[in-house]
Length: 167
Length: 186
Image (cartoon, rainbow over all chains, first blue to last red; front, side):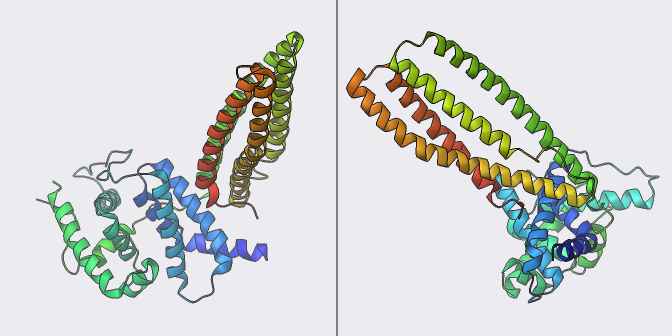
């Protein structure tokens, strides 16, 4: 029984690990905190998996557990948004930088922009950027489909403002 | 001029591609780092506990040699019992929490869960100990107030111990709340 649970957990972590890693990075300010949160999410999934009754898609289930854990973690840490300030400098891609460096720069820049959004928008945006449809986001967050759509529209406008302001 | 991302109506797909560019996957090293940090903190804690316990034992030994009244013996006896109870519990509670059984993610995960469980157990123990001890100390303080006056060593010690236990209990409740939802051993 326990071996089955471990195998299932290992498979889920392998499949969703990169997404959970991005989520942890978005909800934290330092690499060490991101590590901590990621492990807490991993633990939470390990505990929650036996209770998964396939009433929703596995992806929805995993994100729901992860976001609940991340929200709890943020509350317990008493952290406040700080305009995306983190412990590392955002590397400035040189004119001769290759596509990979520029790609990482863009990803990091987008992540910081997302972190500047209000918490109510941040959550739906993260889920949208992870590829969830509006209905799935509604299922994870407990919001109505209409509310999700409204938030995504507002978030898009806010992101436009944030990303447009940067040099 | 922004040469990078701008958000337009149909940009979600483009942003999703940017967002999902490689950022590493969780691995055993990440959890091992976390476990090592916690081990270092536990070592510091043990060092402080050993220092304070040693100081307490020396003080108790000195007090026992010079004790010449019921009051003094009461304080020395009470503190000795308290130190022994806490020492035995602490040693038993930390058993098995120092290192992972192996180097796999599962081993580190199991160790973290065990440590969380023991932290909660310690917090509960402190609260239960206080729940038992505080009424006893209250009765003792009341009795000694009647027999030896309100300013005797034993009365003042009982009151000080009650305050100390109340503060300790409050701290234990905070710790318990913090770790209550953390993953724990089955």
